[in-house]
Length: 303
Image (cartoon, rainbow, N blue to C red):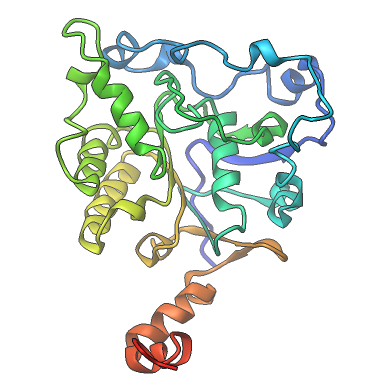
């Protein structure tokens, strides 16, 4: 049996208990407290153009230390109810790691936590591209200790659902001398998919750690194939990718380490051929009429 290639950067992780440890414990567990991405190691053209903090500062600071019986339920309570979270310590990463599973199984929640623990902006972008449109990410990242083979000096967290906010943040920073807009492709005057690909072609080709959350959301199958070409070229340069996806284009990447997320069964290593989604896709493509008769109630107007 052929051994899997060694991951370039991220190897695995540990999950700390729900009780928040003190800062010393986290620092000891995480090999000196390094959050993964060192802004001083970023390319100079990028490092010199970005702010360290999102506009508006910490919106939660004034609320710290207050508690009211009328306050809403903890928005992070759902995290520990996810079966995948209980299994997180078994996660291992390869040069390409794919998270697959149904809606609500925890793929995006776990990927978001890994990205944030690695130092990326929770709504997408890089270590130094900081913006916030609506804070919905969980605090799971506070309990993750990432195990590195090598610290990445560059990378990107690509989120389909927050891409518009990221593009708007970049476009609005249009100072001709110190702004971001002029060092990025035009992100607002193309289709969503074309913008995705323009960003990928300009920023995802160097050696780095790249995390994609459902990149297929904006792309046709032809667009997914173009993005796959970019991924493969970047892999040849020594990059690493972690991709949460419903698309067979990304789930079937050769040599990908595929993890099945299930709302009740949790995490399990699997293969593209064994995914439930693969079985359904093949059934659809082999006999569309029969598939729709069985799963679609007999088609338009059917009883």
